[in-house]
Length: 291
Image (tube, rainbow, N blue to C red; front, top):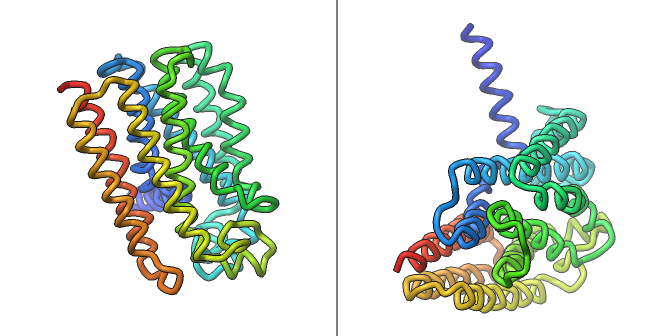
């Protein structure tokens, strides 16, 4: 019995490693933000559960496809060679199977939410599967990734309010697109030389690390402007603006600690600060609605 439990635990651990479960902290607060702004408060328990399941399934699709599609490159990059597929702990076919199951769960979640969610599910799936391949032909891949994550607050919005006539979800889509693109640009600086050698199209590889870090700063400035506009349109109170100032300070710090000649603090900028940013904005929006 102990051996079976240990085996199950090992498989679950590999799955969580494959889909980078800890990165949920980036996108999920923004999905919940779209949900609570659409509901003008907290939604029903059923809506909350299905939005959570849908977001988890969408992330699983995206990461599983990414790891399977990029296994050739990951195995040749020292930074990624220890991922489950390159090190032989999981097969590519298993990752594709995980993606297929997660895709079915996402479809069912969309069906359970409402007709508009279900009708838009195929479009969401195109981006969840397709963004992993964009780096093969365009340095705009950072913004495609951002847009893919930016669909989270839009999907959560229409899960509660099945219409897209309000500008708020579109502003959140744009804000998350530039936010994710900005920190993906910072993260991609680590692989600039590898991408050049392998013929991959990232902005750092195409224009250099200095240019990529400048683009990241501009993206994050646009993020704050768009989040401010969304807060104004949604009528959020003063506590939201305090939280937005705090998030702006975090993004400024994130961009200040990574230099073209010193990438040693990329993980602090990527993992820690962006987790704080998403949680801060979500909590500030809740408080801004209450006060």
